[in-house]
Image (cartoon, rainbow, N blue to C red; front, side, top):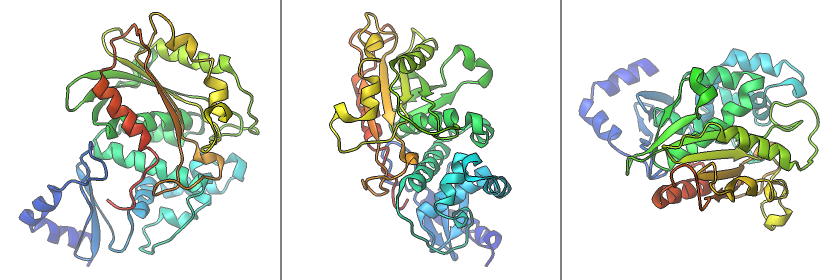
Length: 343
């Protein structure tokens, strides 16, 4: 039976389909995610306003990679894979660690170690899936993700948005033409109706992501302060203002804070802002979700390990971030490395 025939059969059973679509996965307690189901020789994945057919024996992770392939495109991947490894787009480099077959719905299960680059690809795929499920993924992101020079900033905006969506917030992206004077997006808590403004910044480093050169860690408090300084220019004094800052450094998951690379660079740099009276932001989220650097220590279902910090200034100039919202964001940050095996 073809996909079209199976879909027609499925649509001919409106009561059954309605019951299946009324279910909700417990994998994301604050996000409406409908579990996949098997029928007529296929596994069906409802996401937002769409439903996708996948091989019946396919896994959720395979489906995530398939979705990513649709966004980036087979022809784009072929062009990138034809370049030398150092010139390839990060997604093409990460993909080469698994094999191009993840970009094809071939129906055969495969396994690979959750080493750094495959883990980075999986996390990007899941973030996009969650934003599509929340109907919060603007089409404009595709072109920014495809371009080498804008990939890193777009990738981190997606990460920050996915954290907020999984914390129970409804997202409203601001028009790109307004970005020069405003934040990335507004996030409204579905439970309380409180809206917060969110700005995301990512530290660029030679040899990391799409940047040329060779990575060499040189801590720079000035670089961190410049990123925060540019971010707080986007603040509003009428809404709680959150800044997400990506440190983009190799993780040291089992070390004490003083030995972590991101701590060495940020320990003194952020105090200038969070200890100020008044502070120019309601919360500062420091993240170091960087499996793309290589080896990853196993943690959770995927092996992705992340390091992060959440700082709430005591005397913010914008409105205070309410404690229940701060707690929801805190919990979502802690779950960022957990991509469910199945939905």
